[in-house]
Length: 169
Image 1 (cartoon, rainbow, N blue to C red):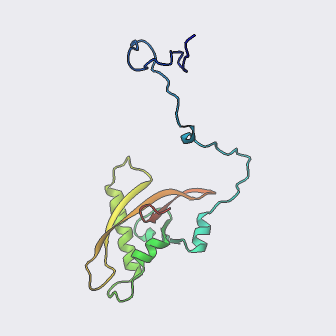
Image 2 (image 1 turned 180 degrees about the vertical axis):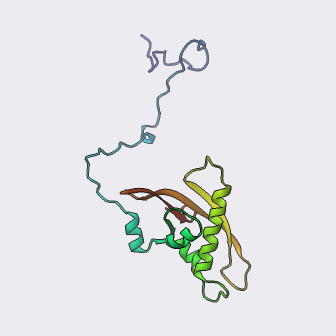
Image 3 (image 1 turned 60 degrees about the vertical axis):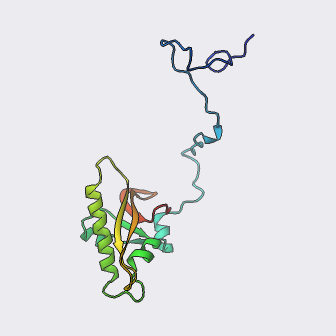
């Protein structure tokens, strides 16, 4: 008796060569079951831990900038991560002619411009660039940031936008 695979073909059968056009495509099992989707928790299972946006704001991990964002034309809440705030909104010591409100306005305005110019099929994630001057004796440098649109919080599905560094969680 010949050893057969899932498709009831001999073990040494090549599923691509020698297959008649009327035969169905071969089913090739996943050789790495570890890459399969993890099981999803049941609806009645308790949540062990959830770090919410409310926690992130209370801990200083995110900063809400919705009031100025609304003036800039955004229709839902906007947040920036602390790393974005420290690197590109906060005015470094020794930098003249700038303030946090102006730097944040520039960031939000350039994001709004990038959103308007982005393809309509691009939903939820957008990289955008702006120039930031962090020293009086050096020219402004181009930086890339990321804007993501997601739920306001785990228990509030209304939309909100978070601006972060590329690769930042």
